[in-house]
Image (tube, rainbow, N blue to C red; front, side):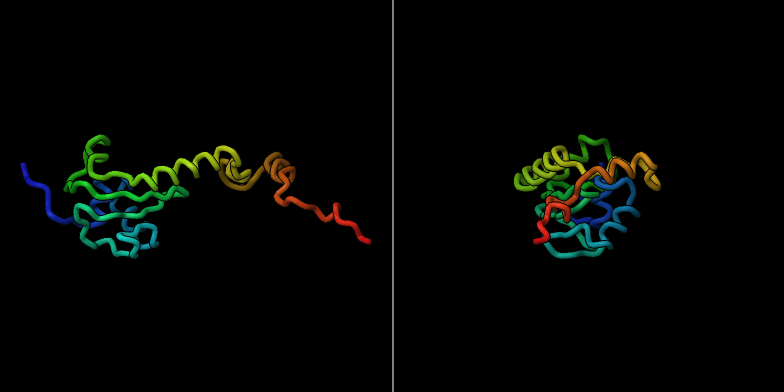
Length: 140
């Protein structure tokens, strides 16, 4: 059995830790600036070491994780979760964002795919995006 390396490529680590399904997706996200190491934008080939703190955004979810281990191969989810630990600040921020999405969902998010249907447009028109309307103002 081979020993874990002292450092490994960032894109490979993100893939092994199961943040992205493929290394190509990990490379794309890193190049778009959605993954940072120590708050600095990085390239896919940057070496990750145990103790590094990564900030990453997957969709609307932002996470901050500390690297606890390195692995050359992608394993089952429990094994992948042992490679990192999410910071307590990140956990509370993620839970607060989930609660905010639950309490006030974006109306356009209910549209499954493609252009809105007539029914979708009516639903969106009923949603009052602004707190004040022009009709409420006094012309005088």
